[in-house]
Image (cartoon, rainbow, N blue to C red; front, top):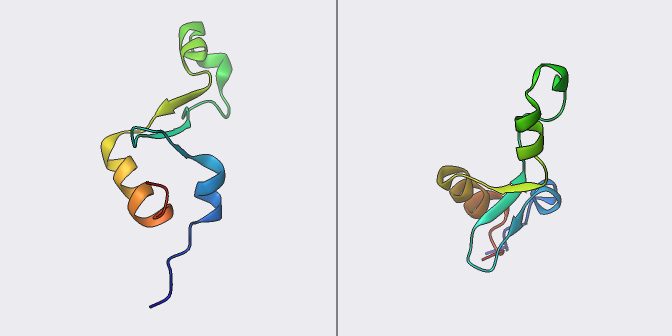
Length: 67
């Protein structure tokens, strides 16, 4: 049985923490910043922990060995 491959795009975009959570970039910051509140822009800096359903998808299909 061949090994599963880690998706290169997921490898570059996500990071699995020591406790098993998946960190990723904050959504909604690509364009349209002029209509966003300053508080949103401040709060959306850096990375954030993905939701549970998204974490399951990333771990199962995109990064099978990052556990």
